[in-house]
Image 1 (cartoon, rainbow, N blue to C red):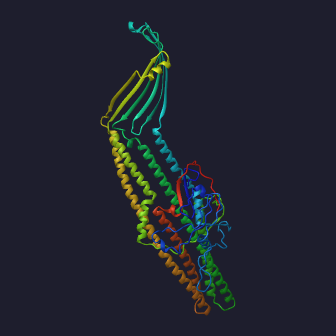
Image 2: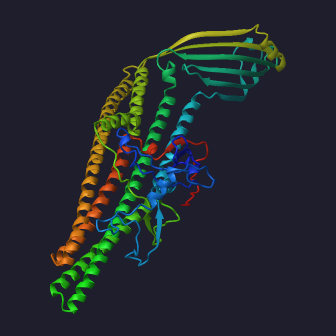
Image 3: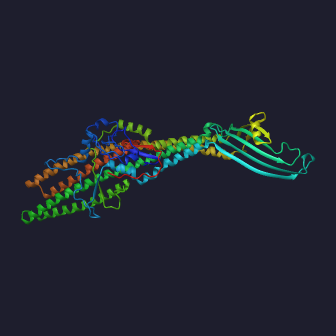
Length: 595
């Protein structure tokens, strides 16, 4: 993102009307996410929950959470109430990595992070964004360069000369002509939007000769002249003359749209990695609880076998369950560290380097009540995408550029016909001041008006250039339609994925509740001697798997929600981030990496 640079990705905060440039975001401490359980049904037509129920604090201010619901939501998000199993004990969704040890470093260093802090860190530090933010700034320099076409230029010519030649005639006034000459000219020249070139020049000439007929001798001749050359066919008109400026501004629009695309893709990657981290934590926690339960069963089975009250096969089943849970937990821990490393790579925070054995610990939880999905959401999302996707802005600008180039190329096929005119007032005197005074008396003048015509024979080069521009415009039209269809397909797929994720949450939630009930029943049956220990082990395993599947569905829903905003082109607004111009230099800002 651009902070003190030419572009700034602004953002993070609760109120939509309160946005900051990225240089301020680096100093903003923000909180987390308002749950949408209460108002999820009201958002049937807008899949944009209030992501950040927290503050929008200016740089340097002490962040304090807003009063009211934001505090409650923040606390609920960080410390969600544990669900209760039918037997009265706490069960699903372990939030903390109790006892987690990195399988590589054998260390347990953990850094709690929120989704918003990860997004904010990525905006400031992500290497890809640091590179991409220079694109619009570079494009803006081409606009200034094109506008400079109409800047006037000052010129000066100065020449000295001597003449020695045969007279060639008795009327030359000398047998050998000797002369001195000094010529000085200065003036201003400028291009007008109509295509005309205007020159205002002042000329002084000093002449001295040995001819007896040369008078006054020496003499100063001065002239002040205005010259105008206006194209009438090729190169005529404001549209043709200003086309480089319009094309440069469209290039800037395209570059800015590309930057927005890069920002949204980065934010989506960060959010996807964050929820995958939540999923990996849940898997580690659920498998850890399953392992603890299996070890307790193993302890009971071993005690009963040693007391002669249990069978060997029950102890073997308990031993097998423990080893299987241990193997599953090792794989889950490995996946967790990989996911943490991927998220650290995306946010690229110098306080969380890849070289350090730190494992990120996600503090936020997915929303528990999904937003209803329907046809109206699909239609509204497609309409929003057509108006908001940066890719549409890119192809719109490219199509406009192709049209401009075609019109300019058509103009360049015309013959060159210029209307030229000049008016000059002159003065002559032995003294330079006298020559200038006579010049401004305007008694002596010269004017000339004429037409200049140049017709290229065959004109093949310009005809070919016009044909190429026509084909390029047709290609731009096809690319515009291809992009439109691709965007519609993205939106349709995103809405379908969101609907499927919503159904998956309901299904996996029912499955988890059934697994809890099954475990409760099997515990009672085993205690009463009506079931085998194998059934209890399977029930414990099924509950752990059900917990993981439900969290998988919930995190997939959050990813689908962000993916829908990306498909609509509103992911920046979804995260309350604005891309704005900044007049500061384009040097990368010093990142503020406070949590």
